[in-house]
Length: 166
Length: 122
Image (cartoon, rainbow over all chains, first blue to last red; front, top):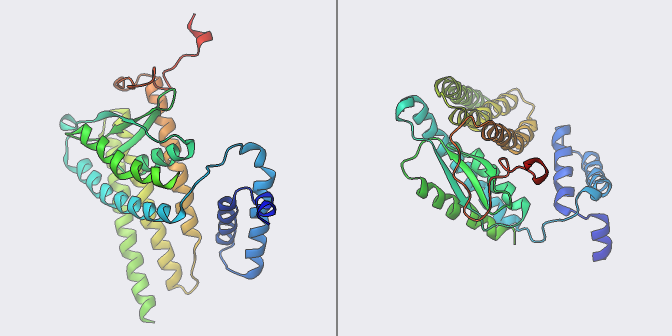
């Protein structure tokens, strides 16, 4: 049973996401649309499985949901802070800085989520990854304390991502 | 009836907040004079600005009597793709040396954008 399930759905989360996206695209929830979405969700990962050699082994959905709520809240707060900086701080007093975030995360998926989170929260943009993937280069718009920003990224986002991707 | 009226007011408020953030983003884009700091303005427009405008569209559709959930999908796609384009613009800036040179990474040789393949070094 388990083997059949894994053969049918090599990426269960991808199947789920594709089905939900299909239903949302149709913009009406009917049984027929849900069934067709599930069919697409099984067919597409199966056809494209050659391009997905490694799947992340452990993934905790519950922790990911609470992480999303924290990130959305941070986006709103940081937006207001950056809007204030844009409107009040003159160019000559702006203190942009590069910060280097040493990474404990190993999986490419986890690093992608961390880099995306850093870019989505305004005031920080993730710019580059070091050639062997051990540190992330982040640009900060305005800060007096670059080390504090780095510690906040590590403590607030990376620590949680380490628990999500195990 | 009451809820529809509330939804219209909610849509108007979301429109105002959203366009306010888009305006601030545009001001930032025009005001900053360095390519890297300028990059920070669009990330703000792309999140709360567009998000509030889409929320207004959802409220307005509800007030008209046909609820719509398309907008949630637009938000999801935007949140997935916006960091990728920002990352590419940042990489181009670093590659063209348009900004201050970033400090070198502690454990590895260099940043992947600045790395030259061995066959090109001679």
